[in-house]
Amino acid sequence: MTKLSLDKILQSQGFGTRKYCRDLVEDGEVSINGEVIRNVKTSFETQGLQFHIFDEDWEFRERVYIVLNKPANFECSRKPSHHPGVLTLLPEQFSWRDVQPVGRLDHDTTGMLLMSDDGPFIHAQSSPKRHVPKVYQATTAEPVTEDLVNLLLKGVKLHDEPELLAAIHCQKLGENLLEIVLEQGKYHQVKRMLAAAGNHCAALQRTTIGKLTLESLELEEGEWSYLTPEQLALLVPS
Image (cartoon, rainbow, N blue to C red):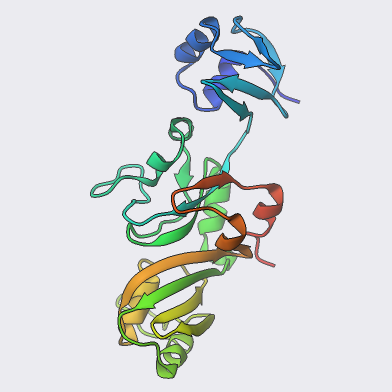
């Protein structure tokens, strides 16, 4: 088991610089098991450790795995240019500990977005070699036709792509609503595929990654939650 001094624990959890975390402890801002701890060198086992700071309860997490129900008009970037970044929807501590989006959703695309400070996890989830299916619901400008569905399943040619890109599943959900399942994760892929197939994407939502569904998370737009081990397991392709 890992044992760390309280100032190192706070720093690792994103509460600021080492000096700032020392000041928090010495000012009596941190308590454990109802007891205010003022000695920064007091050490604790990190596994299962819970502490109270800024009127909130926190649990020590060596790495964080987060899912966000992303609203429209937020950018998946640490340095957004035209809209607020998705990190503004999370507690400030996550920025300090370098939490990043896993892949990107366009600023106007909504739905499930994974975030973490675990580099190997981010790389594995972003890699096309993993073949993790992602389900999207696209609202189309023109009605969804059987020909459109068949063309997306057959594959369309996109600029700068050497081969046809095809959905692994596609179905009509409504007059102007289409469900499409992809594995590749190319830049603006759903929008570009619909355009290449003769339609236009008016709105887009990601509803599923692997076997983890947005519906099961019960998150309103803009809300987030930690991923449980059971939920993380659903992200691994079977």
